[in-house]
Length: 398
Image 1 (spheres, helix red, strand yellow):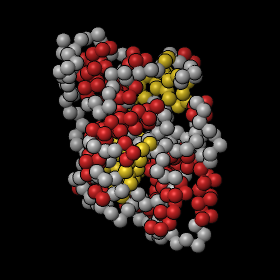
Image 2 (cartoon, rainbow, N blue to C red; image 1 turned 90 degrees about the horizontal axis):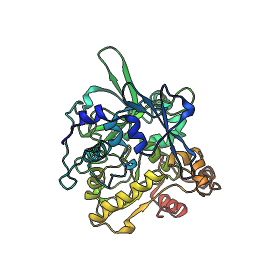
Image 3 (tube, rainbow, N blue to C red; image 1 turned 45 degrees about the vertical axis):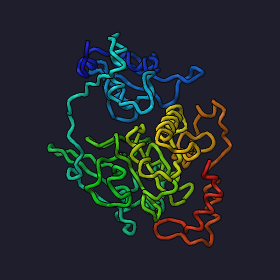
Image 4 (cartoon, one colour; image 1 turned 30 degrees about the horizontal axis):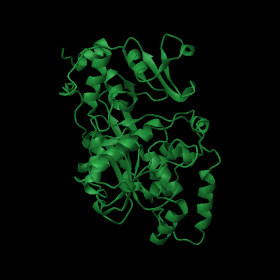
């Protein structure tokens, strides 16, 4: 029996899907809005990994974020949680496999029929937004970006270094409401110059909202209609064209990329997938950078390690040598590079045996001491010679 996406949404309980993804019901939160948490290997709840269910709507969300998932979007945005997932798999094929399995509906797994949902969201159009570009010499302009960076610990020098690669984008609705986010433009490798500022090249935004009053992170996601399967945020801080780049560092978010730069301010090509890396993103950039070394600064968790494995598999298929694709997680017990910058240690990683003695704050302070007498340009960058020296200090190629 061939089922459609509408069938899946109507017939699969979002709570059954969460349990299939490895989450368990948390009775302490009550039953009106059921909460599901992920246990670690010792049976303890993973802090911050919780979904709240709206039973009447058959949707869920992960606080403090406001983004709501139904059965389809939860699978496509969290593919690594399902046993059916394989590296590079089409997300809609995964939806078919997972949902048909949960409904005990046999399908021919050799044919892989994919019934994609009818398009409901129009393609991303940059003209729908009011844009405010970062101006590194305009203090009044810089102040408007401050709320989006302050709780991330990202300073003005780092903002200046990446100033051409982010902006504030405001989307206004017909009813008068509007949404303003820090936006990192997504472009398709090979179809644009990574140094380009041409707005026509932008195929979407990786978006971040202002921090909440309690200091917690605000909205994160992508602009509606973004080309998430191919589009990447690419910040080329080198003097070379992207195709001649020698070192490319990948992250799950632009914040992590900027944080790593602040820890280790070396001019490289910085890339963010804006979430789960897709095969299209990987192949797109790998295909035009055959001589580059790729360093994978994905999160230091099970999902991030799986992303590294997926990336290596795709790179190997494309002829890359194993040593040219390396994991680049932060040292010590930090989940990601922004946590490393903030000295925010992960209790889960400590429990798993990661050392909690390494402190990037000390490393940064030592780096600042080294800068005495060193010229740093108005963009917040070091000289080429100093960049080479910093690579040696940080053991970048690990």
